[in-house]
Image 1: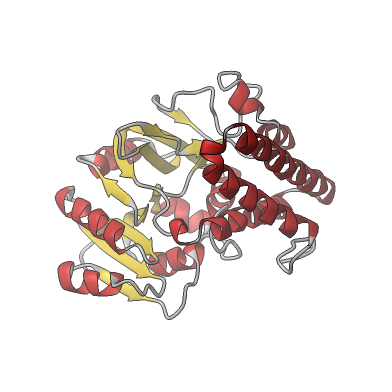
Image 2 (image 1 turned 90 degrees about the horizontal axis):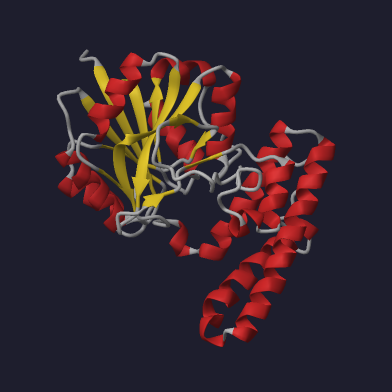
Length: 321
Protein backbone atom coordinates (compact mmCIF):
# COMPACT_ATOMS: atom_id res chain seq x y z
CA UNK A 1 0.00 0.00 0.00
CA UNK A 2 1.36 3.43 -0.98
CA UNK A 3 2.30 5.64 1.93
CA UNK A 4 0.21 8.82 1.98
CA UNK A 5 2.08 11.99 2.91
CA UNK A 6 -0.89 14.32 3.10
CA UNK A 7 -4.59 13.75 3.71
CA UNK A 8 -6.92 16.67 2.98
CA UNK A 9 -10.37 16.48 4.57
CA UNK A 10 -13.17 18.87 3.66
CA UNK A 11 -16.59 18.94 5.30
CA UNK A 12 -19.35 20.51 3.23
CA UNK A 13 -23.01 21.36 3.73
CA UNK A 14 -24.91 23.14 0.96
CA UNK A 15 -21.85 25.09 -0.19
CA UNK A 16 -21.56 23.85 -3.78
CA UNK A 17 -19.97 26.93 -5.37
CA UNK A 18 -17.44 27.34 -2.58
CA UNK A 19 -16.64 23.63 -2.61
CA UNK A 20 -15.97 23.80 -6.34
CA UNK A 21 -13.49 26.65 -5.88
CA UNK A 22 -11.83 24.82 -3.01
CA UNK A 23 -11.33 21.60 -4.98
CA UNK A 24 -10.05 23.44 -8.07
CA UNK A 25 -7.52 25.26 -5.88
CA UNK A 26 -6.31 21.90 -4.58
CA UNK A 27 -5.79 20.67 -8.14
CA UNK A 28 -3.60 23.66 -8.92
CA UNK A 29 -1.66 23.54 -5.64
CA UNK A 30 -0.79 19.85 -5.59
CA UNK A 31 2.78 18.84 -4.87
CA UNK A 32 5.01 15.84 -5.33
CA UNK A 33 3.71 14.53 -2.01
CA UNK A 34 1.39 11.55 -2.17
CA UNK A 35 -1.95 13.13 -1.38
CA UNK A 36 -5.51 12.00 -0.85
CA UNK A 37 -8.57 14.26 -0.78
CA UNK A 38 -11.66 13.31 1.19
CA UNK A 39 -14.92 15.27 1.04
CA UNK A 40 -17.46 14.48 3.75
CA UNK A 41 -20.84 15.84 2.70
CA UNK A 42 -23.45 16.47 5.41
CA UNK A 43 -26.54 15.63 3.34
CA UNK A 44 -26.36 18.64 1.01
CA UNK A 45 -29.31 19.27 -1.27
CA UNK A 46 -27.67 21.84 -3.56
CA UNK A 47 -25.88 19.47 -5.94
CA UNK A 48 -22.59 19.34 -4.02
CA UNK A 49 -22.39 15.56 -4.17
CA UNK A 50 -23.05 15.50 -7.93
CA UNK A 51 -20.38 18.17 -8.41
CA UNK A 52 -17.73 16.04 -6.74
CA UNK A 53 -18.72 12.88 -8.60
CA UNK A 54 -18.82 14.58 -12.01
CA UNK A 55 -15.90 17.02 -11.85
CA UNK A 56 -13.56 15.51 -9.27
CA UNK A 57 -13.79 11.72 -9.69
CA UNK A 58 -10.48 11.08 -7.88
CA UNK A 59 -11.80 12.65 -4.70
CA UNK A 60 -13.03 10.21 -2.06
CA UNK A 61 -16.62 11.34 -1.44
CA UNK A 62 -18.38 10.26 1.75
CA UNK A 63 -22.10 11.11 1.85
CA UNK A 64 -23.86 11.30 5.20
CA UNK A 65 -27.61 10.69 5.28
CA UNK A 66 -28.18 13.62 7.65
CA UNK A 67 -26.29 16.70 8.78
CA UNK A 68 -24.07 15.23 11.48
CA UNK A 69 -22.34 18.50 12.31
CA UNK A 70 -18.76 19.59 11.69
CA UNK A 71 -16.92 17.63 14.38
CA UNK A 72 -18.52 14.25 13.67
CA UNK A 73 -18.10 14.69 9.91
CA UNK A 74 -14.43 15.54 10.37
CA UNK A 75 -13.98 12.44 12.53
CA UNK A 76 -15.55 10.30 9.80
CA UNK A 77 -13.07 11.75 7.31
CA UNK A 78 -10.14 11.19 9.67
CA UNK A 79 -11.18 7.56 10.17
CA UNK A 80 -10.78 7.04 6.40
CA UNK A 81 -7.46 8.87 5.93
CA UNK A 82 -3.92 7.51 5.99
CA UNK A 83 -1.71 10.60 5.77
CA UNK A 84 1.36 11.43 7.82
CA UNK A 85 -0.06 14.94 7.90
CA UNK A 86 -3.78 15.65 8.00
CA UNK A 87 -5.20 18.94 6.69
CA UNK A 88 -8.70 19.89 7.75
CA UNK A 89 -10.00 22.60 5.43
CA UNK A 90 -13.34 24.40 5.26
CA UNK A 91 -15.27 24.19 2.01
CA UNK A 92 -15.04 27.98 1.60
CA UNK A 93 -11.23 28.02 1.54
CA UNK A 94 -8.96 28.26 -1.48
CA UNK A 95 -5.42 26.99 -0.97
CA UNK A 96 -2.79 29.27 -2.49
CA UNK A 97 0.46 28.37 -4.21
CA UNK A 98 3.09 26.42 -2.23
CA UNK A 99 0.93 26.45 0.91
CA UNK A 100 1.23 22.72 1.56
CA UNK A 101 4.93 22.57 0.62
CA UNK A 102 5.86 25.29 3.07
CA UNK A 103 3.72 23.93 5.89
CA UNK A 104 4.97 20.37 5.58
CA UNK A 105 8.59 21.57 5.38
CA UNK A 106 8.13 23.50 8.63
CA UNK A 107 6.44 20.58 10.38
CA UNK A 108 9.21 18.21 9.26
CA UNK A 109 11.82 20.41 10.94
CA UNK A 110 9.82 21.09 14.11
CA UNK A 111 8.77 17.80 15.72
CA UNK A 112 7.37 19.61 18.75
CA UNK A 113 4.63 21.26 16.66
CA UNK A 114 1.37 19.31 16.56
CA UNK A 115 -0.86 21.85 14.82
CA UNK A 116 -0.01 24.47 12.22
CA UNK A 117 -2.22 27.15 10.68
CA UNK A 118 -1.42 29.31 7.64
CA UNK A 119 -2.13 32.99 7.27
CA UNK A 120 -5.72 33.46 6.16
CA UNK A 121 -6.65 36.28 3.81
CA UNK A 122 -10.08 37.47 2.69
CA UNK A 123 -11.17 37.94 -0.96
CA UNK A 124 -9.89 41.55 -0.85
CA UNK A 125 -6.41 40.41 0.16
CA UNK A 126 -6.66 41.56 3.78
CA UNK A 127 -5.33 39.41 6.61
CA UNK A 128 -8.21 37.65 8.36
CA UNK A 129 -8.01 36.78 12.04
CA UNK A 130 -7.50 33.04 12.29
CA UNK A 131 -6.13 32.51 15.79
CA UNK A 132 -6.97 33.66 19.29
CA UNK A 133 -6.30 33.20 22.98
CA UNK A 134 -8.11 30.78 25.23
CA UNK A 135 -11.18 32.40 26.79
CA UNK A 136 -10.83 33.60 30.37
CA UNK A 137 -13.26 35.42 32.61
CA UNK A 138 -11.22 38.58 32.19
CA UNK A 139 -10.96 38.61 28.42
CA UNK A 140 -14.62 37.57 28.11
CA UNK A 141 -15.57 40.52 30.32
CA UNK A 142 -13.44 42.82 28.15
CA UNK A 143 -15.24 41.49 25.07
CA UNK A 144 -18.64 42.10 26.72
CA UNK A 145 -17.75 45.74 27.42
CA UNK A 146 -16.16 46.08 23.94
CA UNK A 147 -12.89 47.15 25.56
CA UNK A 148 -10.99 45.17 22.93
CA UNK A 149 -12.73 47.27 20.25
CA UNK A 150 -12.25 50.57 22.04
CA UNK A 151 -8.57 49.85 22.83
CA UNK A 152 -7.55 47.26 20.21
CA UNK A 153 -3.79 47.71 20.65
CA UNK A 154 -3.83 47.22 24.42
CA UNK A 155 -2.89 43.62 25.18
CA UNK A 156 -4.61 43.76 28.57
CA UNK A 157 -7.99 44.18 26.86
CA UNK A 158 -7.48 42.35 23.57
CA UNK A 159 -6.17 38.99 24.72
CA UNK A 160 -9.11 36.90 23.48
CA UNK A 161 -9.17 37.96 19.82
CA UNK A 162 -5.52 39.11 19.95
CA UNK A 163 -6.44 42.51 18.54
CA UNK A 164 -3.10 43.94 19.72
CA UNK A 165 -1.21 41.84 17.15
CA UNK A 166 -1.22 42.30 13.36
CA UNK A 167 -1.32 38.54 12.62
CA UNK A 168 1.61 38.91 10.26
CA UNK A 169 4.41 37.18 12.19
CA UNK A 170 4.99 33.57 13.14
CA UNK A 171 4.28 32.74 16.77
CA UNK A 172 2.98 30.11 19.13
CA UNK A 173 -0.72 30.68 19.84
CA UNK A 174 -3.42 29.18 22.01
CA UNK A 175 -5.98 28.52 19.29
CA UNK A 176 -5.93 28.12 15.52
CA UNK A 177 -9.49 28.64 14.33
CA UNK A 178 -10.97 25.75 12.45
CA UNK A 179 -11.03 26.89 8.81
CA UNK A 180 -7.56 25.39 8.08
CA UNK A 181 -5.51 23.07 10.30
CA UNK A 182 -2.50 20.95 9.49
CA UNK A 183 -2.13 18.21 12.08
CA UNK A 184 0.77 15.83 12.67
CA UNK A 185 -0.40 12.22 12.72
CA UNK A 186 1.57 11.47 15.89
CA UNK A 187 -0.18 14.34 17.67
CA UNK A 188 -3.58 13.28 16.34
CA UNK A 189 -3.08 9.75 17.62
CA UNK A 190 -2.20 11.08 21.08
CA UNK A 191 -4.81 13.83 21.43
CA UNK A 192 -7.66 11.98 19.76
CA UNK A 193 -10.51 13.05 17.53
CA UNK A 194 -12.70 16.12 17.78
CA UNK A 195 -15.28 16.06 20.58
CA UNK A 196 -18.61 15.34 18.89
CA UNK A 197 -20.65 17.08 21.58
CA UNK A 198 -19.70 20.22 19.62
CA UNK A 199 -22.06 20.07 16.65
CA UNK A 200 -20.57 23.19 15.14
CA UNK A 201 -18.30 25.85 16.71
CA UNK A 202 -15.97 25.66 19.74
CA UNK A 203 -14.56 22.33 18.56
CA UNK A 204 -11.44 24.35 17.67
CA UNK A 205 -11.18 25.76 21.21
CA UNK A 206 -11.61 22.31 22.72
CA UNK A 207 -9.17 20.56 20.39
CA UNK A 208 -6.48 23.22 20.84
CA UNK A 209 -6.96 23.03 24.60
CA UNK A 210 -6.35 19.28 24.44
CA UNK A 211 -3.29 19.71 22.20
CA UNK A 212 -1.85 22.15 24.74
CA UNK A 213 -2.63 19.81 27.63
CA UNK A 214 -0.73 17.07 25.76
CA UNK A 215 2.30 19.41 25.39
CA UNK A 216 2.02 19.88 21.62
CA UNK A 217 2.84 23.32 20.28
CA UNK A 218 0.33 25.21 18.14
CA UNK A 219 1.90 27.60 15.63
CA UNK A 220 0.55 30.36 13.39
CA UNK A 221 2.59 30.23 10.18
CA UNK A 222 2.15 33.28 7.89
CA UNK A 223 4.71 32.04 5.35
CA UNK A 224 1.89 29.92 3.88
CA UNK A 225 -1.41 31.44 2.79
CA UNK A 226 -4.99 30.44 2.08
CA UNK A 227 -8.02 32.46 1.06
CA UNK A 228 -11.19 32.21 3.16
CA UNK A 229 -14.56 33.49 1.99
CA UNK A 230 -16.35 32.86 5.28
CA UNK A 231 -19.92 31.88 6.04
CA UNK A 232 -20.39 29.27 3.30
CA UNK A 233 -22.76 27.23 5.43
CA UNK A 234 -23.69 29.67 8.20
CA UNK A 235 -25.07 32.15 5.67
CA UNK A 236 -27.97 29.73 5.18
CA UNK A 237 -29.29 30.58 8.66
CA UNK A 238 -27.13 33.32 10.26
CA UNK A 239 -29.11 33.89 13.48
CA UNK A 240 -29.41 30.17 14.16
CA UNK A 241 -25.70 29.64 13.58
CA UNK A 242 -24.88 32.56 15.88
CA UNK A 243 -26.96 30.97 18.63
CA UNK A 244 -25.18 27.66 18.03
CA UNK A 245 -21.88 29.49 18.54
CA UNK A 246 -23.04 30.82 21.92
CA UNK A 247 -24.22 27.37 22.99
CA UNK A 248 -20.97 25.77 21.87
CA UNK A 249 -18.89 28.26 23.87
CA UNK A 250 -20.96 27.45 26.95
CA UNK A 251 -20.34 23.74 26.41
CA UNK A 252 -16.60 24.40 26.13
CA UNK A 253 -16.61 26.36 29.38
CA UNK A 254 -18.63 23.69 31.18
CA UNK A 255 -16.20 21.00 30.00
CA UNK A 256 -12.96 22.71 31.00
CA UNK A 257 -13.81 24.93 33.98
CA UNK A 258 -15.55 24.60 37.33
CA UNK A 259 -19.13 25.37 38.29
CA UNK A 260 -18.40 28.80 39.82
CA UNK A 261 -16.34 29.92 36.84
CA UNK A 262 -19.07 28.68 34.50
CA UNK A 263 -21.71 30.66 36.41
CA UNK A 264 -19.66 33.86 36.14
CA UNK A 265 -19.06 33.24 32.44
CA UNK A 266 -22.80 32.68 31.98
CA UNK A 267 -23.58 36.01 33.65
CA UNK A 268 -21.00 37.83 31.52
CA UNK A 269 -22.71 36.45 28.41
CA UNK A 270 -26.07 37.83 29.56
CA UNK A 271 -24.37 41.19 30.13
CA UNK A 272 -22.71 41.01 26.71
CA UNK A 273 -25.92 40.51 24.78
CA UNK A 274 -27.93 42.95 26.92
CA UNK A 275 -25.41 45.68 26.17
CA UNK A 276 -25.51 44.79 22.46
CA UNK A 277 -29.31 45.08 22.35
CA UNK A 278 -29.14 48.47 24.07
CA UNK A 279 -26.24 49.73 21.98
CA UNK A 280 -27.58 48.65 18.59
CA UNK A 281 -31.06 49.97 19.44
CA UNK A 282 -29.62 53.41 20.16
CA UNK A 283 -27.45 53.20 17.03
CA UNK A 284 -30.47 52.34 14.87
CA UNK A 285 -32.33 55.40 16.14
CA UNK A 286 -29.39 57.74 15.63
CA UNK A 287 -28.38 56.28 12.26
CA UNK A 288 -31.55 54.89 10.63
CA UNK A 289 -29.77 54.39 7.32
CA UNK A 290 -27.95 51.48 8.98
CA UNK A 291 -30.98 50.14 10.80
CA UNK A 292 -31.09 46.89 8.78
CA UNK A 293 -27.71 45.70 10.07
CA UNK A 294 -28.57 46.89 13.56
CA UNK A 295 -31.90 45.05 13.50
CA UNK A 296 -30.16 41.78 12.63
CA UNK A 297 -27.66 42.20 15.48
CA UNK A 298 -30.45 43.09 17.91
CA UNK A 299 -32.36 39.96 16.85
CA UNK A 300 -29.38 37.64 17.32
CA UNK A 301 -28.58 39.06 20.77
CA UNK A 302 -32.21 38.83 21.89
CA UNK A 303 -32.29 35.23 20.65
CA UNK A 304 -29.11 34.49 22.58
CA UNK A 305 -30.54 36.02 25.77
CA UNK A 306 -33.64 33.83 25.41
CA UNK A 307 -31.43 30.75 25.24
CA UNK A 308 -29.36 31.87 28.22
CA UNK A 309 -32.38 32.69 30.38
CA UNK A 310 -34.33 29.61 29.42
CA UNK A 311 -37.14 31.36 27.55
CA UNK A 312 -36.98 28.56 24.98
CA UNK A 313 -36.08 24.87 25.11
CA UNK A 314 -32.47 25.45 24.02
CA UNK A 315 -31.39 26.64 27.44
CA UNK A 316 -28.11 25.20 28.67
CA UNK A 317 -27.27 24.53 32.30
CA UNK A 318 -23.99 23.46 33.85
CA UNK A 319 -25.20 19.89 34.28
CA UNK A 320 -26.41 19.36 30.72
CA UNK A 321 -24.36 17.09 28.49
